[in-house]
Length: 135
Ligand SMILES: [Zn+2]
Ligand SMILES: [Zn+2]
Image (cartoon, rainbow, N blue to C red; front, side, top):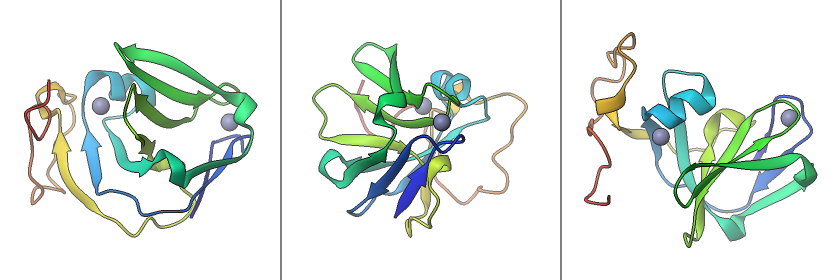
């Protein structure tokens, strides 16, 4: 499975299985992506290979211990990484192939954009913050 940024400078491949897809409505995702929410899935770091353009990848610490990696040429967000975790949280909008996993929930709905209604995905569970008891 392959993915790339908007300008094509960053090219990557995923060699393993992705986790389930989550739609995250938190404020930092909305601002990072300029969108109502961000669709993400976990990928093990060992399964993520940057094929081209790793020199374009820059990161921004959007909350303590969490960095968001993006193409410094076009601004596409590729993944986020929380310190000490062995997976990246892949930004699925950059995929060029079907990940063969599907959305399972919406998280951080407490911070959802007021102008967006989750009507078309109403069958998915919604969590005001994280789906588990993490802080
Ligand atoms: Zn780019
Ligand atoms: Zn988020």
